[in-house]
Each structure stands twice: as C-alpha cells, then as structure tokens.
Length: 104
Image (cartoon, rainbow, N blue to C red):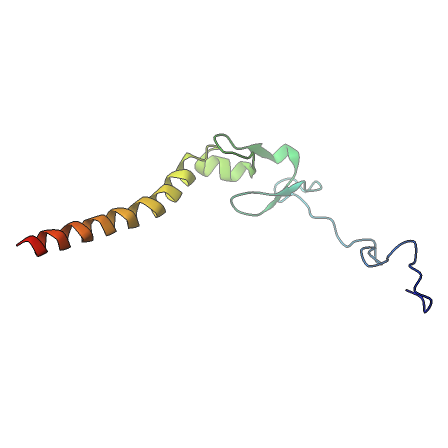
C-alpha cells in the first residue's frame, strides 16, 4: 500500500519468484504427480493409482497400497468402529460389574 492508502492492483504475496520449485514426481513411473496416495502419502500420477470404494468420498491410492489392502475402505471403517465400540463395551462391563457387586 502506498502512503496515500491506495491498493496496488495485484499482491505479490502468492506469486513464486523462482517459478514455484520442483514439481512432485510419481514414485512409480516418474511422471508429474496428481496428488498423494491416501494411505502411504507417496506422490502418484493418475495412471499409477486407483480410486477407493465404499466411502463417503473418493480417494486415490497407489497400486502398491492396492496390492497390500485392496481398494475397499471396509477395514478402515471397522477400525474406526472398533475405537468407538470397544471403550463403550468396556464401560458397560465396568458398570455391570459395579452393579453386581453393589447388589451382593
């Protein structure tokens, strides 16, 4: 901003001065990466990834992660439900045990 309070037509805060740096490359084939794998975080191109199935959103996973666990999110959802259900079941067991001990 100038001393008179006028704004410049364009801010240079988001413009890279060196061309933006290196482009991320696919770990499998070396092409320009489209984004990271949702499981391992490795950069992958559109040809070296598959889309997940069974979730609210669609995620891209690399072919190596697909070979290890498939493209289904069922195991991930089971883990989330386990983190919720196991503590609730443990608390219910403790409450039931305390109620049984109090009645005796």
